[in-house]
Amino acid sequence: MLHILNGVNGDLIAMEAKYHKNCFATYVSKKSTLGLAKGEAVDSTHERALQELVTDLNAGIEQGRAYDMMSLNPGSYTTQNLKIRLQKHFSDIDAIVFHQPAERSKSELVYSSGVNVQDILNAWAVFKSPATGNESVNDEILQSSEILRVASLIKQEIRKCTGIPTRPLNTQDVSMRASRQLIPDCLYLLIKLLVTADKRSGPPDALNALSQTTNIEDERQILSITQDIIHCNTKGRVKLPKHTSLAMCIYHLTSSKRLIELLNRMGHCVSYDEMCAVNMSIAEEVLAQVEAFGTVILTNIKPGALVQIALTITT
Image (cartoon, rainbow, N blue to C red):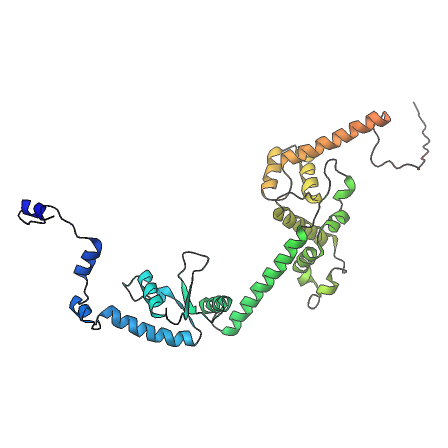
């Protein structure tokens, strides 16, 4: 190094010398290196702010409070450096815990190690809620938890749905009675109360709502909505009477592939390819009956019934 300096007459700028990062940080630091060498306390703005922060933080942690790291950060002092300083301060007693929420965009929480994490998160959610009163906040949290519990229960019942066989399709499986047997009672009751609650006198009784009769228009709407929910939840894996029969009906009335595709995108019927497969299975069943009996047997003909018809032909 000395012979290099001698070659440029000790001109560091001419030789493009650079400081080591740690050395340069120490050189430009506002801390008094002389005071550090003598063991004296460093009197700086950051140090005084940190001492005040630690004092307030001690009092709050003893009361079981939680703090947001962003709210504790005093301006230009980085959050990571603040975290390191707090860890060093509380390292002897191990009194604080840092918790990173699931959403990485949110700041860390710091709280006492003797407090449960779930209690901290619940209290933080109540604190951040836009509601003005604690009573209204508690009611909203309770309603949300109840809605979540009901939704989980209904999803568990939907997983048990088996649907109907569509290859071949049985005409008796597309009736309203057959559709009602496929729908879970909890889902049917929820939609029924939503559709018919305003039409009943007095508050709805959930215990007797299943046994109470509804008019044909409301029953048709209830069955349609519940089947749509099951279709969306199962991604169309469970075959339902409405979605199969509606696609076939639209095809036989309009022969429009585009219309079936639009209804399928809205979740109202099966896809066009699925409808063609159902039609093909019905045709194959009819051909199998022709081979077995030598003729086409209509599905509405029942064995054991004898009908005699007298005809008079006049010319």
